[in-house]
Image (cartoon, rainbow, N blue to C red; front, side, top):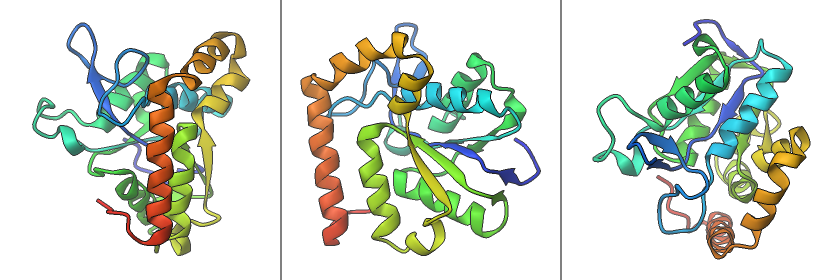
Length: 208
């Protein structure tokens, strides 16, 4: 972990984890998904963060996410943030450029961690918050319809992982993403996210 303040940090919001064929915990991607609410594909966020970081390697990346719903399944010391960090390092990001938020158990808590970091000066400038395209409307609602509005509005920009990947390597990603958009699991995820946005705006969302 770096000890200096984070200038214009790249923030990777954590989501789900799943075991690969070797039994290693990884972010979800392709056939390896988790939960019952449709496709997640969290690893796209990791790939996108790497593409952004390559443009300016002086920027630090925040890997965000505690143990969450997997607390009873994950080995000691393993969190969503540590898994994201391992994947970023495997892509070529130096460990010293990765900051871990090991405590946040939900998207809302991850945003609160970032708000606190900006408030106390640990993070400065404008943070780029990376998640999947389907997730951005719910994040936006959390920022604009809760007390986070005064803390994060105009201090962060929301970045869709899929958009970054299509811009950086369309040949690699267009077929995969195109097929995924037509899948039942992706449509299920979109519907679940839409419900979440509606609940936030109506004040009935159960924040964790």
